[in-house]
Length: 199
Image (cartoon, rainbow, N blue to C red; front, side, top):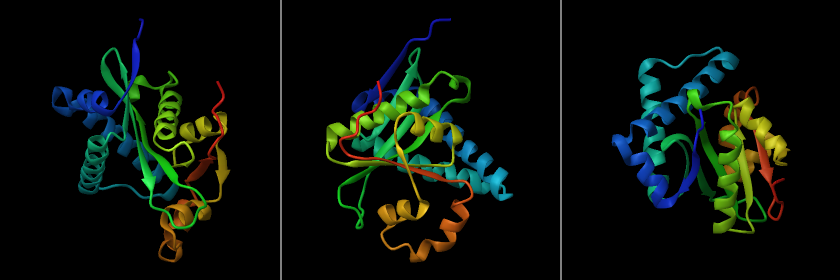
């Protein structure tokens, strides 16, 4: 069956996510948090309680709403239905020579996976960041092996987790335990300013 896809941003992305009372947006958030919970459980031998899962969904929803209102959300639609989403944010970093933006919360509905939508979302997010700040470096930190493979294919450079925390947090000292835990499952990437994605 032919599937018509479209990348949306700004008002169009906001309207697509707000349609049908946000049910597709909620499905994307659940898909994102479920995926993280599964990976976290597999690697750290811990599981999210139902209450914790709901709280995590609520926290992601609140953050997505903030970014959506700022125009920092990218949406991929399939036959008019929001089937993928990513957020972009500027890092208020203190330990890097250039401005840094981060691509976060790359999510594709389970039924829409295997169609290279994650790659299209990353490309669209890079384009959106370059339009806002052509001289910025771009970060992606992920626990998703599929996203890590996309970063490799698109020419992102792998960086140590310590460097990721230096850029995003400044002082690493309060996060040393978190860094050791994240080292088990996280992979971090940087796309330098001026580096183009392969066609």
